[in-house]
Image (tube, rainbow, N blue to C red; front, side, top):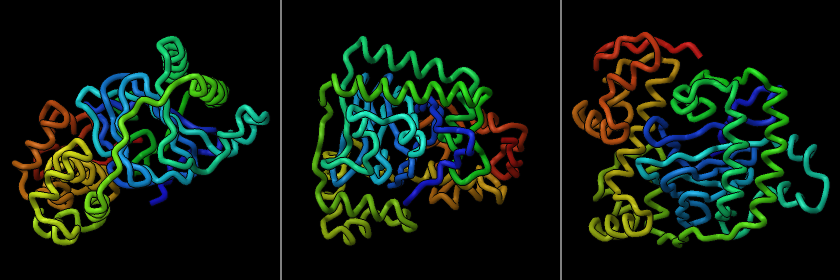
Length: 311
C-alpha cells in the first residue's frame, strides 16, 4: 500500500517525535515516495520488511527507501523515536557527490538499512532533530495524526518552512555521514511463511478472523501459529490483533463521517466497548475519555457524536 503523506509543495519533508504513549502506530504494510529515517531515542521498536523482523533499540538509525515496503509490528511502552521524511526532489538537489549517491536509491537489498550510532553521533543527530521541532505543530497533534494524518484532513504545517527545509537538508547529510561510521547490531529474524501469511490476512479487510480460521488459512494449527507468531515477532497474536483494531478505531473516529464512539469501536472490530476500553487503557495508560478529549470539544460518551477536529 502506497501511503500519501500529504506534504504541501513548500515543504521538502517533515519530522516528528513518535511516542508509544500517545501515538497510534501504523501497523499496515506500506511505503511512500519519500525517504524515511527513524532514530530510536528510547525503548525498542520492531519492523517487518522483506520477510524479516528487525528489532531496534536506543541509538539505532534506520532507513526506509521509497520502494521499501515496511510494517511496524511492535513497540515497547516507553518507545520514543524520531520519524523524518525527505522528498525525492530535495534529495536530488542535495546529493551530488558519490559520497551521497546511496541516498538516491529506491530500495536496499536485504531488508532495512540500519546502524547503531556511537553516543557522540547520536547526540548530534538527536539535537539537530530537536532543533527542527521548534515551530512545528504540538506534539500531541503530531502523534495523534502520526505526523501526516491517517485518513483525515490533517496536513503538516510549520511556522518556518524555509528554516525547516534548510534543517532537513543538513539533517539528511549529517545522518548519512553518521550512518557510515556506525555498526549494525539489530536482531534479525527470518519469518516463517505462516507468520507472513497471518500478517497479510490481518492487515487486510478480514482482520476479525478468529484464531482457528486464521490458522487454517495459514496451513498450520492454532497453537502452532500462536507460538510461532509470538516467538518470531515478539508480540502475542492477540495483542497484535487488538493493536490493529485500535489503529482502525482511530481511523474511523478521526474520519470525515463523524461516527459515535460506539460506531467506531464496532467498525474497528472490537466485540464490545468493555474490550475496547481495556485495550485502549493498556495502550495509553489511561481511559479513552481523557485521551479523546484532546481532540478538542466533543461529546465523548460512548454514544456521543465526536465533532470534527480543527486541523
